[in-house]
Structure formats: structure tokens, C-alpha cells
Length: 215
Image (tube, rainbow, N blue to C red; front, side, top):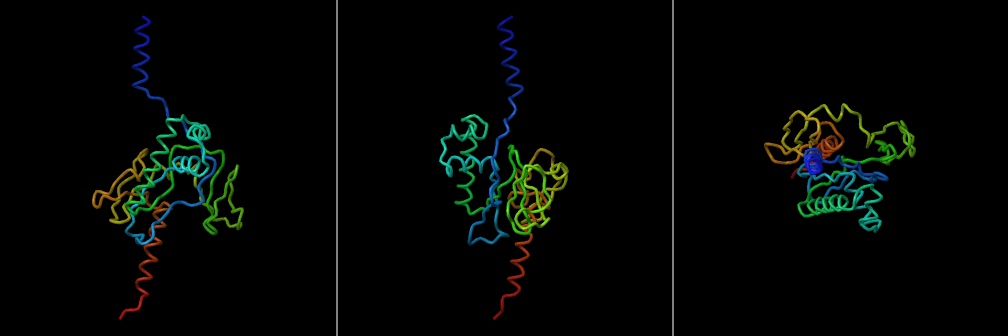
């Protein structure tokens, strides 16, 4: 009977893996990504650095903590921190070598605070409570960076900004995990911040090209 109980427990653990521990993040990054010089925005294919991956870089490389100390800060095991940290470094290395943009977003993380970015002054606002106005410029053009509204996570489409391919978004599958069937580039959520940024940059580049004098 004892051996049978051990067998059942082992089988249960294989069938029902432990849930992922939510990673603690102290503060959001002051920027939302990076763009390489010398490559037009319309030609860029982004890679995504998750918030917890950014935090691992901040703690280990910027703060100089050991992996054990950083893991304790994030409330995760040391082996888990190593996996997150190595994935972050591979993502950044790929962006550098292949000339890709870096989007910092998403992930399985937790913060005690609400994060906002002011669309007027671009400053990041951090607050224990929900706010409506920027603490720097007093504008009410606030965009929430974490704890997003549920509908925005379950509805809408995934779109390829390069080829205008659009497919319905499937719950639980981030658009960044899907590649365009036409060009192979990473898709993004239609209408989200990075999609709007891409469209604005494309419009500005088209305007600048039209304003150039012709010989």
C-alpha cells in the first residue's frame, strides 16, 4: 500500500505540474523598448523582453546582486531565476545581432503598485492606488502599464503590421508568439500601444519622404 501511494503521488505530480510562482517586480522600466539606429521603423521586426526578464537583468547586471539574492528579491527559486535571466540575455543578444527592436511588456509577474505612463509627458507614474492624473504634469492622459482590463486581453485581433495580415486573438496565446503566415514576422495586438506607435512612425516617415525636394 505504501509503494502504491508513492506511485500515485509521483503520477499525480507528472500529470499536474506545480503552478508557476508569480515573479515580484519592484518598478517598471522607464522606457517601453529600444529601437536600433539605421533601420527604418517600418522594416523592424521586434522581440519581446518580458517584465520579469527585464527585472532579472536589472537585479543581476545593474544592481550587481548574486543570482541567489536576485531570486529572493523576485520570490522565485535560484534555478528559475537562472532560466529567466538566460532567456533575457538571449533576447537582448538576438536584438543586437539581428537589428531588431525590443518591446518590454507582458509576463507572469506581480507588483504591489499600479503603473501608468503619461501620454502627455511620457513619465512613468507609480502609485499604491489607481490614479487619473499625472503626478508630474497633471494631465489626465494616463495609460495603465500593468493590471490591464480583462476585455483587452481576450478580444480583438493579432495583426502583422508589415503585411496587414489579421487573425482573431485566441485567449491565452499572446500575439507575440504567432508569426505572420505571409512574411514570417512576429505579430502584435491590433490597436495596442506598439501597434499605434508603429503606425505613427510609418505615417511620419511617409510625410518626411513626401516633403523631400525632388531634383
